[in-house]
Image 1 (tube, one colour):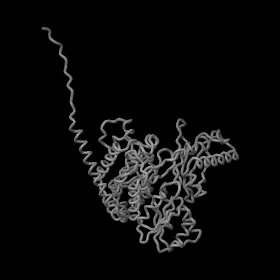
Image 2 (cartoon, rainbow, N blue to C red):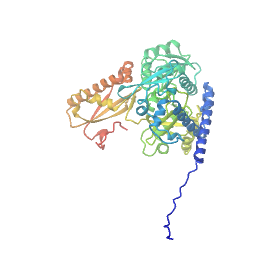
Image 3 (spheres, one colour):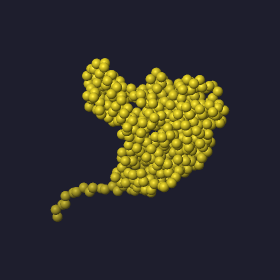
Image 4 (spheres, rainbow, N blue to C red):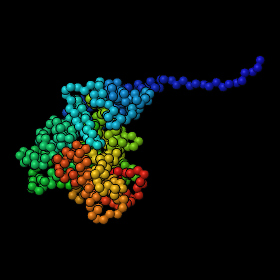
Length: 525
């Protein structure tokens, strides 16, 4: 009998489903425990004293539970939210056992692709108990963000808890100077502060604020909430009128854009305390906030090269805003581009899930930051003083700002494409412009203004340069006013908001020196 040729048998390895089942069970268990911890936190935070108690007892061990909780929120939304279910079906990825298995969402891929009702739980927008906030996006397209009663209650609770911790006041009186029109910040702040203080919603009206301070007198502890530039206007106006600062106790809380330490120092010559908060209309106005520790850390980063390199990296020249945040209220991550991803984990009407708001950031645990600081004995001694007040142990958000070449000015986002329209449409000198970029610059008076840098195609005479700069300034202001509701509103409330600066540069000079012309960079770093 002929011998059959030997044929090796390919052994097929059958992967046991047990590890996957165990891993899934572990995630389910962690998610359940995370929900329980979050529920206990919400229960404790019903009173500002409870909020302070939980903020002072966050431990790194809880971060894994917060991540599992965020993953459970995404899994729940996949079952309950029609838009999110369709979003995931268009991006098949097998079983999503980890939070990172769920894809990022953003305005373009998720918000614009699905209507408001489809993005709500069970595909229904309730007919009562809902407040719709609005923000303006690129090219002035409005974005509407419905918020349910439970969501608003949680935001109000967190703002009130933070305020009671950072701004201890005996007889609190809040003067809410945020815009009452274009942004949701004003109305939300007013409602939140009413839980813990007397509130007057003046909006950004200097006259009304001054009248309020004089009428109610120095027996109250005042907290003014406003955008940073408006606080400077208020200080300067009160100084000009001879306001008796020494008889009053006036603190300030601000948001909407970054604030330099030079402006903080200027304001704290009159205000007893100035603190900033971070939020976004897409998400919540109370994502993160400054404390005495974070302000000390930011100021230390300005001058301490060793700490700066250890915390930010050796190549980082920018100084971020530094906030503390609660990962059980908003779970934060960063992607490979260091863009901030936010998952709002509370009971929200329209879940925001791994949502990319377009900000560049670093995330650092409280313990890691303290460890780096304590490596130096001088810093360690300063740290004890910085931690003596609030004693919050929540993780840190180091925020660099918009990652999409956008600058934030008076609460409005200025987009390069809108500036480009203003530069070129109807401009008789448009042919003289090679390219442009944007910056937000603080001048000697501590006023922050947008600067439009223009690279010329060829040398021009002085009259030609002046005519070009004037045409560009007027064109950009006109276009921004027509397409951005927020910019237009800022002009109504403050006429100096339209003071856009234009600087002309010879070819290859200024911020354009050494740049390749294949791809423009629209933001001066």
